[in-house]
Length: 115
Image (tube, rainbow, N blue to C red; front, side, top):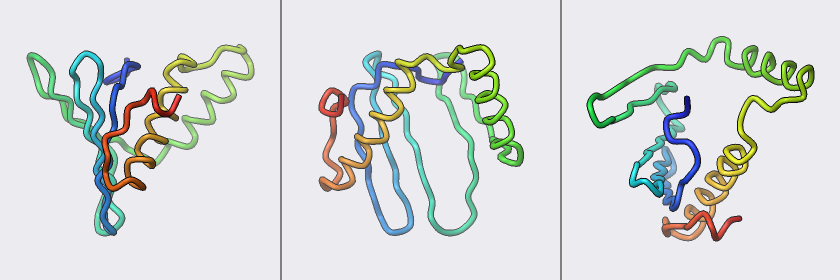
């Protein structure tokens, strides 16, 4: 189950030489904050602040490419996408909005500007 799913409304990216912080706001008022580091130690993971709990998890990347390829092979064999196409399109729009925000001095970008 995805943490946020489809429905992202706006994206804003704050950029410095050593890091980016991207803030997405969803239609249901959920907020996603993504941080990318270019120097020093880094890892993959998330913290979800839910109504009744806070969930943190680190993501082990040792086998991430292998697991991705398993899903690609499964997709070719079954002819079924492992992710909803609408969600895939929104992921790309999120990334494009993040770049647009970076290029426009951290302006808040509405995803409908991208689609």
